[in-house]
Image (cartoon, rainbow, N blue to C red; front, side, top):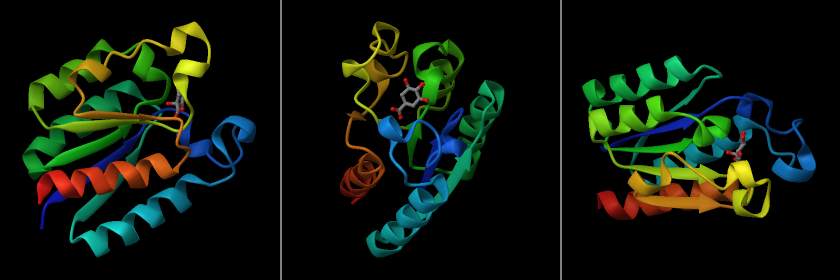
Length: 145
Ligand code: DQA
């Protein structure tokens, strides 16, 4: 069974209560449970990780290589727009990944328009709400088939 890792970055632990007009009312636990059920149907092994710390995310990406993770789905939150370290971690482990944003970052403030990850991502989702994670997992399954 191919292993897929879902990483959520800073403040995404607050999903459901955080700016619900932007991010909706679904909690991170709901999102992760939905992804686990979908992964079972798709015959994938899935692990979920959330951290508010840049270094914790970098460490988790490094561990993913040791664990033989085949694909990462990541919502890097605000680190999308700031983190050379997370970009370099993906470069270092050479694991393909999908970048997910719940909101359409291109419709928002100018500082959200640039991503340090998009040009090295396999695919980018933005503006699909939390459905974006499910669509990303479906894409990943098709790539791993
Ligand atoms: C986000 C968009 C980012 O700009 C923001 O900092 C987040 C969430 C999204 O899912 O839409 O924390 O990645």
